[in-house]
Structures are given as C-alpha cells and as structure tokens.
Image 1 (cartoon, rainbow, N blue to C red):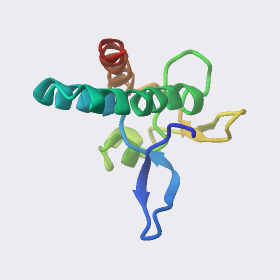
Image 2 (cartoon, rainbow, N blue to C red; image 1 turned 30 degrees about the horizontal axis):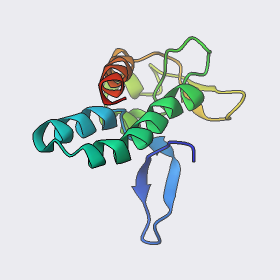
Image 3 (cartoon, rainbow, N blue to C red; image 1 turned 30 degrees about the vertical axis):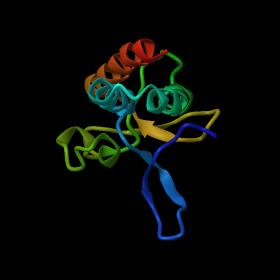
Length: 124
C-alpha cells in the first residue's frame, strides 16, 4: 500500500486521481485518542498515519530536498487559492513516480508535515 488517501472514492469504492488530502491524519488520530484514551484505536491507526506521512515524501518531494509540494489547489483544501493559478504556479514532474506537483514548496503543507512528525512520535 502506498499510504495515499485519495481525494475522492467512487461508488465502487475505487480511489481516483493522484490528488489527496492534506496531511492532518496523525493530528486527528491523536485528538481522538486524547479524548477516548482508546489505545487499540491508536495502535490500529498508527501504521495508517505513518504510511500517509511517508507517502508525501515519496510522491510529493520532486527535488529530493525533503520539502513537499501540492499537486493542485484542491489537494490543499484551498481549491481556488491565487497561488495555485497557472500564471503563478507551474507544474514539475517527479522522475521516479511521474506525479506532477506545483513548482513551489508550500509553507502550510510543510508545516503540516512537521506537526505530523510530532504527533507520530507521541503515538509511537
């Protein structure tokens, strides 16, 4: 499994496209755990959250700098943000995965990834 969480799932249960969701899963899992103290839930979700975190570096770090980029505005949750418009952002390709990302490193995305590392370390 790649760790990817698709943006949408069709009526047959198939994930579509390469766009996904922002890396906020470990934070969400940790918040649920903090309220419920359900250790079994935490154990079950840790691998999923870890794989989702690794996915970003394997498929969204096109330059090998450990800084990731969005594929498009929809993936960020800010679908119509000006920074995603074609006059401001170009598309670049990841040679190993052939996924195209935008040519800038988003502060929000990389901040989410840093925070996810912190939550994953609490969960481990």
